[in-house]
Length: 251
Image (cartoon, rainbow, N blue to C red):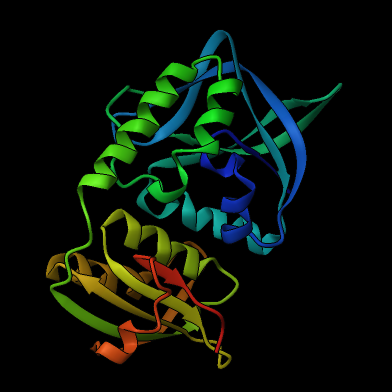
């Protein structure tokens, strides 16, 4: 499956974390579209006569595609999946692209991207590639500034283990994305028995929302049972130093 990335997923480091099996095929271009920030606060592309959007073409495995479905909030009904022709070198190739359902312009969502990685090389790459690079740069700088002013405030801690069809469907990427969007700390990991384990810390409403989201899971998941208990200091200590939310190795 070919996937055209035009935002944070142009970053090799970001894709290595979200989609370990993805392979970058090189730069590509989508004609007849331009970059914008939608009314829901998310980045997208919309038709524009004479427009051009430069990005990166990736080849995804089925598992990587499931992870992308979780990372791009398909479960919230914000994005549509489109298959559009992109130009890679001298060839036209059909690629999967995520586009907002609503095309009204808006302000950036402060929870859209992981700010730790958005300020440096991504701005340089995106600013050089996008015809509408000024809009993208303003969008990313706004995100970074908001992140620096806000941290994760620990109020409650909850630990959970979820069983069902929860591995190979992008469940960890789904949890990581939702946790960062809600400024919830903690970690998530797969277990060898086929379950997914997670620990959340933050404001009570945000943590409760994370638990409820995990009862449903991402597109393609089936949650049979969720076990929940209070989190402990020992649970929180598993988080990687310096990270608000970690994706840990399988145990």
